[in-house]
Amino acid sequence: MAKSEMSGPGSGSSYGSTKLSDSNVGIATREGEPMLPDSGGPWSQSSTSYNFTTKQQANFSLEQAWLDMFGIAPSAKIKREFYSLLTKMEKQYATKTVASGAGGSSTQTSKAYTFSTADVLSQFVQKYTPSMFKQGNLGEASAKVFDETVTYANNMGVEVSSAAILADVTSNVLKTKSISDIKKYYREQAMKMYPDIAKRLQENDQLTIRDLATPYINKFALLFDRDENQISLTDPDLQDALAKNKSMSEFTTSLKKRSDYVVTDYAKKEASDLAGAFKKVWGF
Image 1 (cartoon, helix red, strand yellow):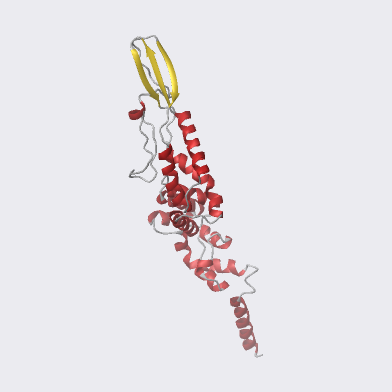
Image 2: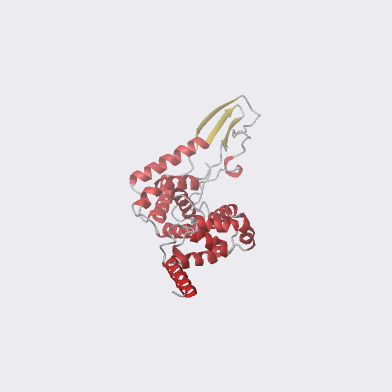
């Protein structure tokens, strides 16, 4: 029987994965069926399910994942559900075929489709992530990745759905996707949104859209009396300025056309100063 690489007590990795390969499952044809010996026939074949993971190993990996993601241990019901899913996957995608004949018997294991128990675990946990997070169940690891992911997406001016964020968090915490891969995706999306400044992002991978938008943000904050950190890169005028690489004068003009500008302190002061200058010119 092939050896499962899914971690268990004493294992060195956090979750690990069971990957079927030629070295541990025998030789398989392109269609995934085992190549049985040609000599010594006639042969008869029988296939049985090929289980790679024990319940103890599955429970250990699920418990570790649940603690990292949600800060609590999984219930007995959750453990049964996960192990049932895992064994179903293993039965579906790996079989042991025994061929018997005059020349003896030969056992081969078909590769069928390669799959990873780490991916199965990640997808299983991801199913519960929205409801668990909504209940306030965040593990230390998932909370850290969640904050880092949301902050980076915001700094790159990319609007990401909550479902996509949670999927990225789950994948990273369970080690099926690195934080670098997640950031790379957001960065590529930002470069598509702002082609005129994409080259600057390519030249310096430490730069974010927020870095490049700082002059616009400062002007925005001044005119509307806001904190710079509260200004979203998804603001339409800000996005338009970035996309068109507007001059500061052009950006300022567009901001002053906004309906909410006229009620700002800056606009009122500007109007008062203009009135004062008018009076002075005309001697009022």
